[in-house]
Image 1: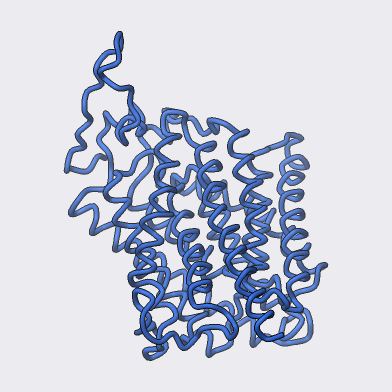
Image 2: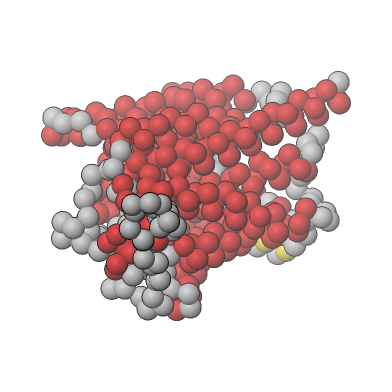
Amino acid sequence: MAALAEGLNNVWVVLAAALVIFMEGGFGLLEAGFVQAKNMVSIITKVWMDLTAGSLAYWFAGFGLMYGADRAGLFGGSGFLLHGAIPGLPPALSPYAFWLFQAAFAVAAVSIVSGAVAERMRPRAYLLFVLVMCAVIYPVSGHWVWGGGWLGRLGMRDFAGSGVVHAVGGWSALAAALVLGSRRGRWSGGVPARPASLTLAAAGCFILWFGWFGFNAGSTLSATAPALGLVAVNTQLAAAAGGLTAFIWPLLRSERCDAAMAMNGGLAGLVAITAGCAFVTPLSAILIGAVAGVVVNVAFPLVERWRVDDPVGAVAVHGCGGAWGVLAVGLFATRGGLFEGGGLHLLGVQALGLVALSAWAFGTTWLCFKLLAATVGIRVPASVEEAGLDLGWGIAPAPDVEGSAPVPALQPARTESA
């Protein structure tokens, strides 16, 4: 029976990891649908860089920093390149299956940033950031909560990553967008806010929703976990509540529907329930998702009012939605939640953890982008941005095709654009 349980656990975790990896297709389609047509291929290429370079960076250093032997509660110090001791491995689970699942999470975290820097970032700079994010930024903060670090010891609860993955990714996206600057003409009418293809974005949203069952239910790390069904049900209910609330909110205020906002509301519901999906009742999951739908409706125009150019809404959905999800555990958890008679202790721990994770993500990403700007440069030249990054990323007609004009090589300058 023990061997059978171990086999089932490994099959379940590998399958869940595949679902989370499949979410990269959702990220790619969603982001491609929200940018201009001349930049659709470049954003897909970015997500491809997340999946390839991010996986290797996490194998090289990230996994060891996240789950290796604890060093003063701050980071792990063993298990690099999948060699050596990993004291935090779950019982009855292959370390390789566990690594695959965690690598998929690391890739998801950096993919949140890719949409916020769309249509204006240089490829080599983005590649370097992916390596840093998956090797250092995400794993260190993940160790604090999941790898035996100081926040986990304090009692912070984040079942599948509203804070560790989504808040970290969302506030990293904010720092990246601020340092990178807005697209040319964004606030003077030169760049349309209208998505290039809502159909494509909707397809990406459906894929993300589907993959999220691997994200949340897979975090049980066991095919026989009693909470597996509850996690899956809470995931579905929160997403539905978030999507419906985000659809109704603008309808009540202005008698118009906003399909893009409804999709983002569904994603915000998924983001918010990710921390507490194993700790709350289905009714609480609906309330968490519904509030997330309102949060994204309020946060999105605030981000634009502050002139932060975030083409896909990563800050509103993942940063704000993730923050709400972390705090919601302190309110609704059946064990320790404020609304369940648990007092303020858990809520205080959750708030402290949220501040720490957000400050780490924002600060390290800000520093990383400043260093990249001073060395390799982070902005494409005005000519490349005007023509579209698909040309600058090598997606151009072949110059030797009969009847076609040669496409001039686009050489990005080392200097930064205003």
